[in-house]
Length: 119
Image: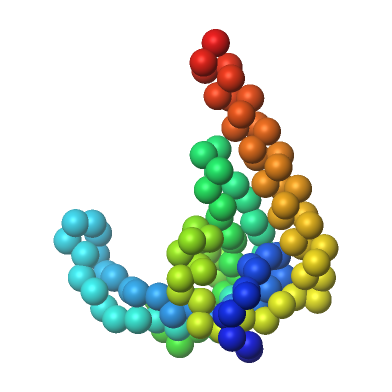
């Protein structure tokens, strides 16, 4: 896997992630350490407030708390911060174009909802 310099995360990208792991429930959570896993981005979507989310398919893991084959969701801003390795997918430019179109659709829906609530 390459470096994360100039990285565009899109569907099909294979990434290596290092993130903090906690046990217990908030506010009594306990920091257990860092966990490292590799995943492929299988879905990108925007929330109603235009927050980008990625669905990941875990390919391999070095930690018991996250199993291979499990699908997990992470915010894009969190992923960009935690990615330690990155490799483009086979259809990188096509996936990037699709993500841009999805963003435009999400923005249009958001603007429409804001206009209705203001009226």
